[in-house]
Amino acid sequence: MLSPGEIVEALIAKLRAIPELVAEMEGDATRIYAYHDAYPRNVSLLSAVYEAPHPSIVVAWQRTSPGQFGRNEVWKHELILYLRAREAPEGPDSSYYRLFMLMVNGVPDGESLRLLNAEIHPSCYPMDVPACGRVTDEQGVDHFVVNLSLREIGDA
Image (cartoon, rainbow, N blue to C red; front, side):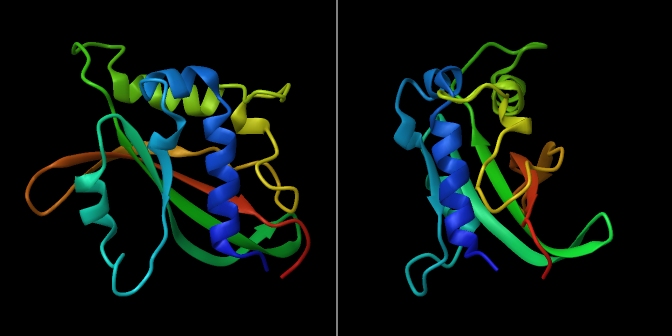
C-alpha cells in the first residue's frame, strides 16, 4: 500500500503543471497545496480551508479503503480538494466552475492526456471520474469541493 501523503503530493505536482490552472491561481503554483494532518498543529481541515488564500486549492486525504478493479481487490485512496476561487463576475462561467473544468480537462506540461486520463502516480490507475459540488458548513458557508479517488495497481 502506498502512503496517502505520497499520492496527495503526486496530485499536487500534476495540478501545478497545468498552466491554465496556475494562471487562475494568479500565477502562483504554491497556492495549490496539501493539508497534511499533524497533531497538534493540523487537526482541523476546515480551519485550514478558512485560512486558505483566495484563490487556492487545498488538497487533503479523506480515506483509504478496499476497492475493486475488475475482479481484483485494490486499495482505493480518496482525496478531497477545496476550491477557493478568485473574485470574478457571477454567471454561467463562474470561477468555481472554471476551476473544476481546468482540473478535469487541463493537460499538465509534459503530458499528452488531460488530467482526467493522465497518470497521477506510477503505482495507480488514472483517477476515477471526479465529483464536484457544494458542501455547507455549520455556519452556513458554502465550500466547493472536488472528490476524487485513485486505485492502486495490483491487489490489496
